[in-house]
Length: 197
Image 1 (cartoon, one colour):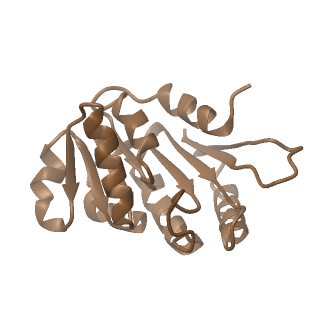
Image 2: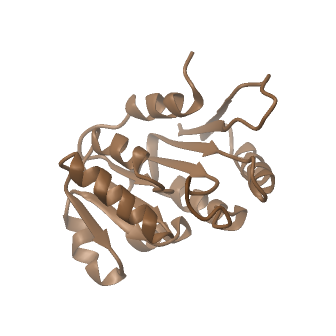
């Protein structure tokens, strides 16, 4: 049986083609960014922590990927004309500042950066702002995968906000599914997948 993250990757792998524009909304240590870079070379990856940028750059460079770090908006030409993995030191709520064209997919890992400052967490307001922007940018047939880690202070609040928000999406336009274990004693992550019809 697939774990939740493996299911997220499988759902995205089904639809992403070379040259599709995709977003890693929570770069972290770069595992999802690397996964996406094996499917397309047009990736926007976001994080608010320098250590996430550095870890991801190291991971992707080691894998031979074309990586650009974008530290400010002055690099608009790089953002729009260069097929590469773009590592952006900014919150995912500002995705529209950088992504100007329709996207095929996006992935979130909500929570905190493993082995880093656990007080720096994703939050409901910025996550929902990012989700709103990405659902507008998503093409028909595109998907957004949300891995919701909620076993930390503030995590339950964000989980509830996200579940409520996606539950209100119009069923004529969206398919929304959840995937996760029901018999665990701790707080295993929950996967939510959105697909635009």
